[in-house]
Length: 114
Length: 111
Image (cartoon, rainbow over all chains, first blue to last red):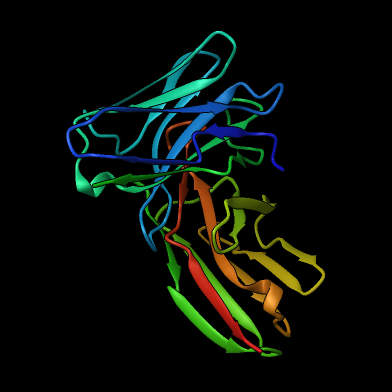
């Protein structure tokens, strides 16, 4: 157990819909990262938040947005869903903003768009 | 932008054989991290290498960081079925705090 929680575990929805994925980081971790992993693919970095502020942005679509709340939990919003958005979405947390320590990954949310 | 490439993409071995995955970055890295993702699981941190030429061992796993700090390798001696999974390397990008992950090497072990 990494200490990072993600809800829901599974999500099945239809094209055009909007969903929200939730992540609670490890206690004390200020950074939250979101990744997308499609079938048999690597980890595509989407976005990073540090202590409530957006810190780095990756290949995140305009239809996707995220935020980190004062209690440090984070939400990833996916809208106008397409079939190609079906993937595993991982959240990871890290103690600081830098890159000198490990990331702790949550169990992921499996999104299926029908 | 920075690219991190891993080879091979897939490796199938007989139990007891050795396995090596290689990671190459387009830029010099301040450190490199390795993660393992079991089938159906999430990535789990294995190790971080920081120094040029550094070699670290974890039981049957040997991790190496190149002299130029642009490449790294993970070698598993005498693979076991518990070694199956996808091994990712990750290096920090020029965007502070952002790590670029390689595409991973998926290892299958035949008993």
